[in-house]
Image 1 (tube, one colour):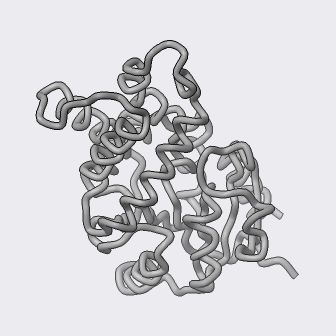
Image 2 (cartoon, one colour):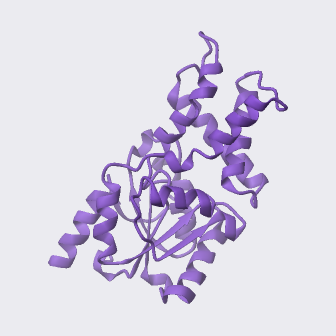
Image 3 (cartoon, rainbow, N blue to C red):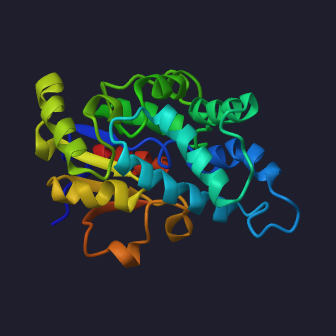
Length: 256
């Protein structure tokens, strides 16, 4: 028998790709790099291709530098992308440093999905809201006070303080331990909410958490993996197209 949505005490969230439109934000932030590509380049204006390359190098660098703040890591990803695309950026030039810095600091400008803020406000009436994110504290605060319109979360746990990036299981165990200490939330009181299968739902299952897939673009998403490739590694208690759909289901559950 499926666990009722009304039985949980806390919702833990991936932010970027679940609450925030990561793909649109990254695409805009990559515009300067795309502009460097000559006409006829195979990746010129290839949104999904550029996002795929970004995800590839982001994963490599997160594994290589688990303690590097995400804002700084993004700048390094930008430089790796430039090398891969044969864009002649001079590492010593002021222009290159400015582009890397701008890309790294773009996180707070990535837009929220249209349903996110209203859904979070509704969910906050029923649950404790917890963030588990791969960004650093400063970057998330820019998101919270900007696109998320000042939504208050009961706890925010980031890769910066944990010292590793999802999908490392350590991030989930850190959240579970600290949420119990800080908020009194038990392991079985969590429902983890995320779009990315590989980064969130796979380790959530290993950590013994129930999870809810917010599909967004589903298998057409540029990051997070495909369900057909990971279905044996995830255990989705719920799945909804949007966070708004989840909020609606929660309200119906509490009224029934």
